[in-house]
Length: 252
Image (cartoon, rainbow, N blue to C red; front, side, top):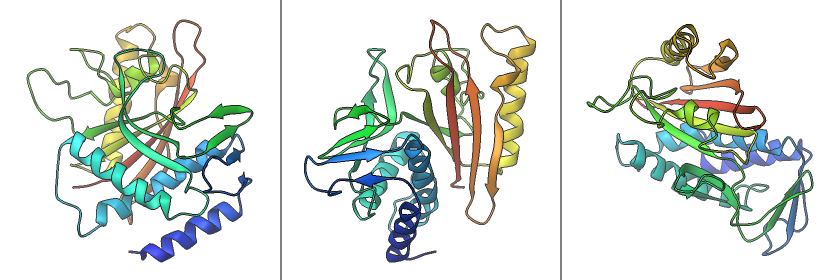
């Protein structure tokens, strides 16, 4: 596994090739100006950190979604602080959704001690840059749990994709992410399962679901245990389509 210093160098190299510009980056209250592609680069940063977080020898062994997400949040905060170009970020868990009151986002990056501008839109430390939903695969077994919970739940509106698709989460955003903690079976198994569950929703005539909701595999790296997928979903009430980047990390 790369050393921490090597990871910082990798992040520096990535940012040197990007269009990100800052005004005295890291200084309190100085503005940071980012291009429209910066949120995709942020997703890449998180994806690159997932195996480093998982493989840290001092990380306590936990299985629950809440504990895993709390650990990941702590790791991302440390990594961002030591990464030139991402040191204006903070990560928080259980953050209230900006639009739907009473809903909470599992994990969010936000500005820290600065104002971030993305394509003319202002973001301060109270604002969510990217809503992130976290799920376990497989869904833990219980009488009130649906095995398809990464996509949808028959018992509630707790399905991961369902929350974004119906506008319960991320209504103020057109890009979001989902992290899956894969605790059994390889990514290709879950890719097939998710595709099957979505197609069954379409075939059964479930309102709002169509063939365009399926996931597309962008990368599956067995060496790191990271798979990246993409999906795009229509939403009701005049909301624009939302794109989801799916980051699956093997933790079994």
